Image (cartoon, rainbow, N blue to C red; front, side, top):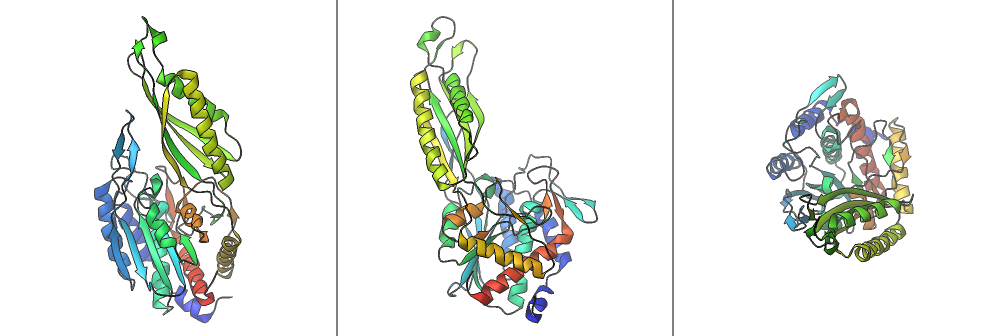
Length: 398
């Protein structure tokens, strides 16, 4: 049952301002790596979150490298990350996270919002997750206006869509000492929450062979491209229900009359449990060694597991129950299901903090030019987040 104080808090959440925020923010291109766009978005968010009674600051991204097509390391450009700290000395504190980046770069054709019908706004990042950021801010503003003294940190990073490599240390730092966390990734269109998630690791296998003339003395060469293809096939054949494996791309090769001496294989692995991740590491080592021996090449592996598996702990189950009960009291039926996707919730859970990571907006077709947001769900989702935070503050525990 919702108390009078809770009702008064939830009544402060206003629809029109949230819709306007989403439209304004979605008009800024924030494809990961578009530093100029991310800078503009960070400034807009810093102004909006400046209405909260805390310290707002922008933090430079950590150095991240990626492997170019020729196998050389290259620095990756990332934007700054936004941190808001409110009541840092409170005994009971929570973490709220989101991301400002999208998968749509400046050269992508999907750049503007349009109304698909009276309730459906299409646009880049409207659900994933500029709508989620609007939900988060509305919930926090209502909480502050109610006079509830909750301690919390907010992190909105600029590189979630590419694995949060430049913000992983910040996530771990801010997770320390937190009793619970909410991440504002979009829920499914019906409000279903993601529960357990696999881990994720991205790797580049840099394969060095030996060049030779393809007609005169091919036997003197060591074909790096063939070795890359062999490794890709072996990885694909090793896929199991407990370990998703996706060989994604091979770079390399050259003129038809030259045995290629260089190739790069890029692949992703998704282990369901920490034990599966450990087995995956052993598998990668064995397969790369076997391919080296079979083809006379050298393989250097770049990358790693950047998202740990996210099982459901007893503490996380209690947090899900709290959210579900808050939804029921609001007349919202909150279902749950496991998912194959990953997000910053994986990183938070790995720090021992219970997290519900799909507290954001309702929408669908994310990561495509058909992405949409259901605007009539913005207020209910903000109310769900606000009520969850109020009850966490009242309980002083999960």
